[in-house]
Length: 121
Image (tube, rainbow, N blue to C red; front, side, top):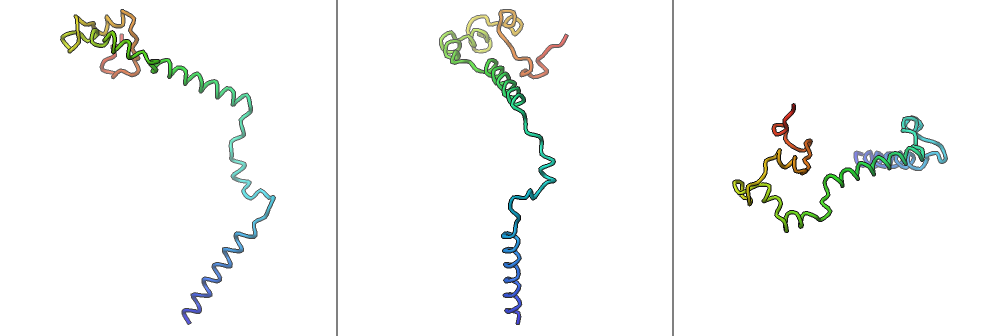
């Protein structure tokens, strides 16, 4: 008796699953609430503006962080980093202080420095 009941239960479940998957309406929007909450599609001008902003952001990143392959010249050939460090810190020559380096034109990304190093006036 239990075996027949479990077979009937399985058959009933299969019939329900089949009915649910094969009787969907076609050509009808089935979820209007979700579609109504979607963001409106961007216009062509909005997409162009977004692309221009993204290109500027990428350009700034490249300009700031890309060495364009010059690290071999400045570090390998000239050993500039050793001259900046000085003999006391394992480099060559007298070295330069951070203030002198900035006065000479070396660039520093203040946002990338730890706050304890940045002097505010």
